[in-house]
Image (cartoon, rainbow, N blue to C red):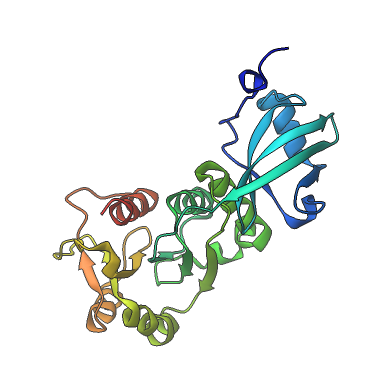
Length: 250
């Protein structure tokens, strides 16, 4: 009989199979009856006896052994034992981008480990963006899960909406500044990025075309740090990656 260890396969294509409480029967058994079954069968080409990396949504990481698998049902036995990776301490404040880019940005921010995302209204955010179906909770959750699966994480960032810039200034900004610095990516920013990422409580990325002068002035007057990202004009999704990357690798 072949050594069992030699036949075990861990599948990196779906870096993590996320399980919710409704998938679980007790702590050590799971049963799945949705599109994930097709992914495991056709993309991962898994078979009974193979093992998969799994995570409990909002909880631990672990490993699962496939007990049975057919076109409609996947049954697993699960062993838990690892904590989810740590989150970035800073909140991402993002002027609501074009809906077609929102999902990609949510996925990227989740992969990088953002714990909280605020979708902000500014003057240059088109009013029509707020009526997009991509802002519905189910659509947001779908993109967050994709980011979690890619990063082998189980804890989704909290996503909130703040349509009124003035309310953000008066209510949320003081709380952020009480915890540390708010870094604002700005084309004309002259400050450097903080060398100590632990001092950063939040990062703000403006809309396409940038923040208006009075919005920038209002943020600066309240103590935000205006940081330049270099001579190139970056798309919103690239600016998000650059700023969060500096936090991640500081």
